[in-house]
Image 1 (cartoon, rainbow, N blue to C red):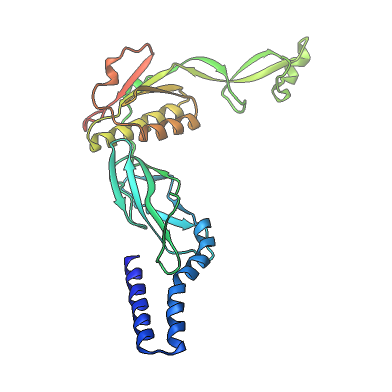
Image 2 (cartoon, one colour):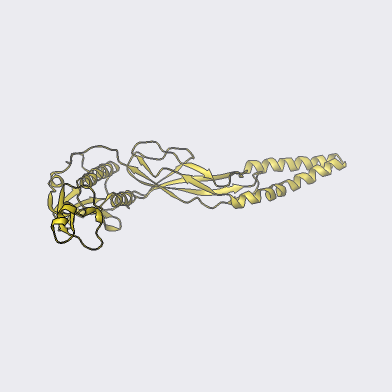
Length: 308
């Protein structure tokens, strides 16, 4: 912008000198045109300036160590005016901040959420002489996920076994079934017609699934970046193992906000839990292990290199 203003000043000065030295009508027209040029540029630029918006295009999730870039898109594509901006990246879990350039790789050496936003955004007229503040683009969150590594599962989690059977939600295939009378509202697909013909009423063959005891995973959101990487990697493996084995579980995490809790029953619950933990604020001290829990199975996720 300073360069454009300097060039315009030089052009006006040269036009004024030419007007003084050459006292003809053409010199006056040139000087008048130079003086009116910025205002003409402003008038022509105003529609685009008022409608100009930019947005950030970033991936929702990336794997630790993989390259991912910040891409900006203009929401006013027809002759958009020149603009400038800074990209700020913040890591909520540690409070670190980076300034990156467009199309520059995001810091993905360690796990955790990254908040990407714009700063000092400005838009100019077509000649670059007038500067206006541009509305900041909505911030975006990129979650750096731990590497997909198969880690040893603690024995306390392997020992989770079915204690009883419960009705399988949504029905479908199951190895175990329970015969019971038909109740209003039950699906007709489960009716056992042969048995119903021998009985006095309709009988259902309801699929059953194991009712496993509640497991508890605890984690402290603190430690060095390498320790946090190991914690997230283990937590992801342990939680996925429990879900694959049909076990409901809870996650308790110590963050700067205190102890936070998530109940996980299915994959959607697990995704919400992991997304929240990756952006949780750093807990300066303490450990969730200091609490007493009443649960059948408990596993604390640590960040020591030799933990199994």
